[in-house]
Length: 381
Image (cartoon, rainbow, N blue to C red):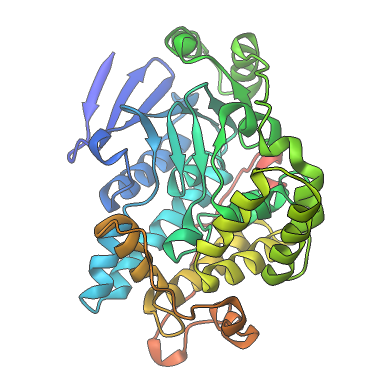
C-alpha cells in the first residue's frame, strides 16, 4: 500500500491495487472543504478517470464527519475585504468538481459515516454509490445561513419523492441514514462496524465495471427501520404543504395543518422556516422548482449565477449576516434584510437568476467538456 500525503495533507491518498481511497483530513473543522481540498480532489478525479489502472474511487472523511460543507468562513472574509470575486472562484471550482462527479465514468463510492452537510453532499450525492450508516446526519442548512442549497442541490433535491426536496432544502431538516436511504439520497446502508470489512472487499475488485462494486455493496447493505418520528412518515403532509406555489402559501398550509393535528413536527417545521432568511427561502424554492426541469450542468450554471449575486450582496447581505450569527459570533440571532417574506419581492428574486451585469466583465460557469460518458451520466444532462 502506498500512502501519499497531499502537499497540504488535507486529502490523504491511499492506493490499493486498482482502488484509490481519498480521505478528507481536516477533522477539527469537520472536514469542511477548503480551496486546496477542492482543487486537489478535482485534480485527482480527473487523473483517475484517464488512468486505466484505477477501477474505482472511495471517498471518506476522518473523524466524526464525512464533510460538514464548504469552508464558507474563508469566503465571507474575502467578501468583507471587498473581494467577493475570490469567493466566486471557490464556488466555481467546487461546482466544477460536483459536475465531474455527477458525470464520472468510474464508480465513486462515498462513505457517509457522520456529518454530511452542504458541500459535503455536493462531493458525494452526485457520485454513483453513497453509503449511509447509523451515525449519518445529513442536512442542507443553507437558508439559515443566508445562502441557498447549491452544489447542484437543485438537481438532486428536486428529484426526491414528492416535495420532500423542498422540505429538506427550505427547512434545513436533519435526516439520518435510514431516511437518506428511504428517499434515495443514499444508495446503501451499512452499519459502521462493518465498514472496514466492506472497504477490504471493495479493494479486491479487479474491474472498473460498477456492477462488481454494486454486488459487494449489496452483500453488506441492510434495510434500517425508519424512526417513528421520521419526517418521511409525513410525506402526505409534506406534499400537501410544500407543493404550494410560494413560501408564504407553504407556511399558511402548515399552519392550517397544525390546527387540525397535534403533531409537534409541524410547529417545529414552521419555526425553522420563520427563522430562515426570507431572501434565501424565496430563491431556494424557485431554484429547486427550476431544477426539476434542468440537467445537472444547467443547475450548476444557474446556481453559480445565484451564488455570485449572493456574494456581491447588492440585493441582500444575508449571507454575511447569517455566517456572522451562526458561525462567527454564534449568537444565532441574524438580522435579515429584507426582514419579512412579503418584503422580498418577486422582482428581487428575479435578479438572482439573471446574468451578472456586463460591467462586471463576468462570465457564466464554464463546465469542462466530458467525453465517453456512461449512460447513467448522460441521463443527468
